[in-house]
Length: 221
Image (cartoon, rainbow, N blue to C red; front, top):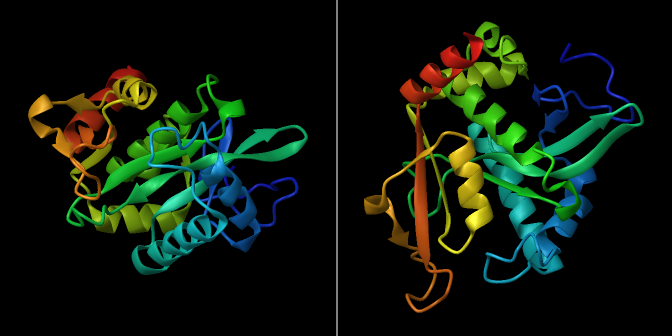
């Protein structure tokens, strides 16, 4: 169960899957998040890796979002018999240039790539946000804390978006595996980047509540 003893971890996860546990970030996660944001492979499709100060500022924005909205970016721990290992982050955010939308985002350390962790984490967040009924989620192997379930139910999201630089083919492939839809007419130039920047052009993917319900029903059948 969600509130069972978590080895080496005093916090309770807000979401748990068969292999992963998601936590609200605390100061104990600061160094791990900084390491993630400084990794050149992780940040290859961003303008550059973040400095320590920049990563710290991003971490504080994450924590502020949780305090303000009741949701945000969570740390992801891989569960094993030995305990838990930090693998990356996944979560929901309001883009600064489009605060009326809610996006899903993720970053994972390279040694956790290729094992399905990012897909599992992102799929669980999409399901929790668009299908916040805890009984329905149990059928998908996802356990959600009562507080987060209540927050997401109040939020009542009808759609979640995801966007990335068009050159980020790994991220695009993951979005497709999640079942998100892409219409080239939605693609855009990122307002924070020069139009001539190699990362300027962005692709946008969508997941609607209706589509998530249909996908969940199909899996259970």
